[in-house]
Image (cartoon, rainbow, N blue to C red):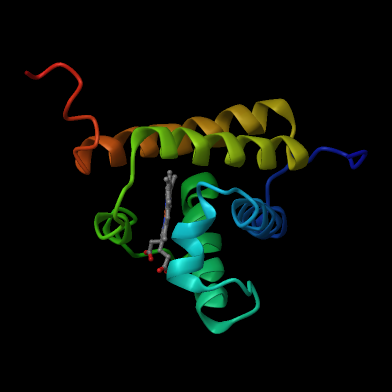
Length: 135
Ligand code: HEM
């Protein structure tokens, strides 16, 4: 992509990030089934619309400390079957690829760092890392 990389993060670029990310997710054979199952295959339907607005607000909060996200980001993941640490790595990889198409390297590092920290917490809270060396 020969577009200029974005230095100053605003709502517009976050909306672009969110939509570009989920378009890639739907192309990813491991991640897509979770979203197809929860939201369907048409990113213009009502469920996707709700999800995208929620995620715009979530990332506005995470990155710019604004936006109206008041939810619990862990909750929907509690009910997803077959999540693994490897799937979280794949999620982070696709997220990073999307970030690199939009933002300057320092923004990529900053936002990816926040995603990675939360992902690590999800894995811990969902007890997906249990079998490491407890036994
Ligand atoms: C394997 C990795 C992941 C999968 C398969 C996954 C899948 C999903 C699904 C299916 C939903 C529910 C959509 C709906 O029914 O509305 C959801 C919601 C959400 N996910 Fe993930 N997710 C993953 C990782 C992450 C990570 C690492 C983050 C954050 C860094 C994240 C942030 C969120 C947020 C903020 C919501 C919305 C929560 C709300 O409704 O308040 N997810 N995710």
